[in-house]
Length: 69
Image (cartoon, rainbow, N blue to C red; front, side):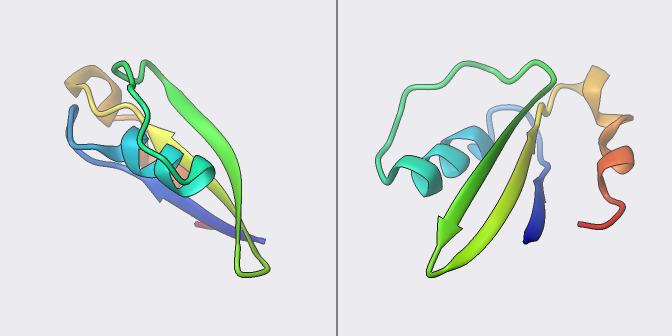
């Protein structure tokens, strides 16, 4: 299992990337409030991916997700 955390400014495309990897297609998304967590299997590798909201009010919590990723 591999762990990946997606962080970046709001409206940067983090959720779009996550669901492109998961579903293999572009999806319409809404701003992430909090986080999205999905498991993606790619070439027999399993990834647990955390997509963290990018709003200013959420950025101070990003570092809590860095451990073991």
